[in-house]
Length: 248
Image (tube, rainbow, N blue to C red):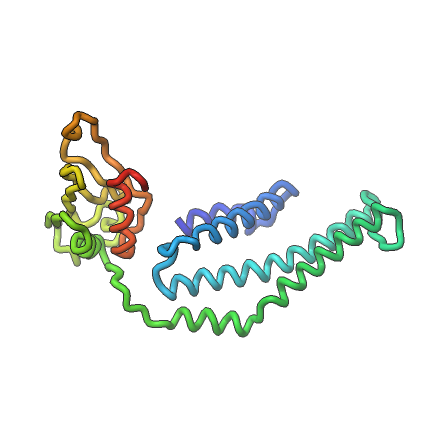
């Protein structure tokens, strides 16, 4: 996921934007990413470890510094347009439009400088280092087999069905990500319906072991929004419960 998103942006950033449309696209993508991140962090399960917080903080510090530089460069572009004779020359003592442009330049420059002043490179590096080296003792699994084991221990009416194709420790990372170890879990919901929880094609699925509810309502399989192979077991348990309840 991270690689795919970054590769898409690098199609523009590495050769450099060829036109204003690409420049604006980068600005809009940055804004959407920042807003999306702020919204994502409202969820207590957005990050599991201090190390993940370190990576996120490092990226945010870089965004702030880059945003400051970009705001100041916008002011330079107004000067370049004026030098080409394409806009009014910004001037506080000029006509209304010239004065307004000068005000805009001042705001751009001040905002850029404020962004730079809001962070200290040494403090940022120290903060990232502290987060990166903070001990984490949470129960993160190291494979899908451990994910199944830890999840089954957390959920009521959950039965782990061992079915490893090969010893769990011998499953390669690529196979583990795609289809897991071969085990699965049978879950019984509050209506007494049994569901099969398993991993296939890089996705977690909850599939009914019956065609319909006791009242005759047809049942269909569901997939979790979570695709990570080894999520925090409590987070995964919550998602499974929400999926069975039809709220995820």
